[in-house]
Structures are given as C-alpha cells and as structure tokens.
Image (cartoon, rainbow, N blue to C red):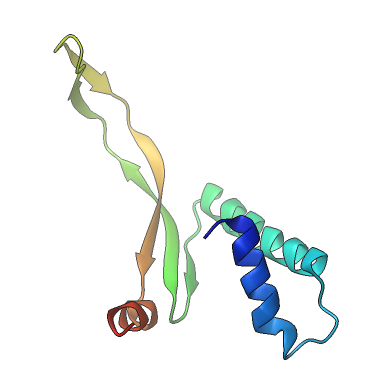
Length: 97
C-alpha cells in the first residue's frame, strides 16, 4: 500500500463518522501526523500509541565493518536510527488475521 492508497483508506474509515471529509482534508491530516512523528523522533522523544506501537530513535554504537569489494576493515561511526516496536494490540491483530 502506498501513501495515496493509505490516505484513501483513512478517508473511507472516517467517512461514516465525519461527513464531508475530502481527500485533501485527509491528506493534510495524514501529513500532519507523519510530520509530528518525525519531529518528535528527531528531538529524541518516544511516541507511544496505545494498542499500536512505539516510535523511537536508538543509537547504534561505532563498530568495525568490512568493505565488501576490498575486504579492508573500516570503522563505522556511531549513528542514530529510527525504531518501531509493535505493541500487543497490533501484534494480536496481525497474529489473528
């Protein structure tokens, strides 16, 4: 499912609850949610959505690596990376699908 498919599905999901919601409204909403998640993670915050999952950043320690072409050992710097952890509600939904 790509971004546009996701936006369409969200619109269909809220159409019964919120009348008159357009694709444009839904796009603004979805983009806002994604932007706030991104801002929180860049700031090092943990975003936990009950029954769904936890978004956070983790620090990957510096370590030795190997250049696959030359076999030379190289030092890979410490880096921050995004991490998502599924919580029980999502795990159960996927497991029972």
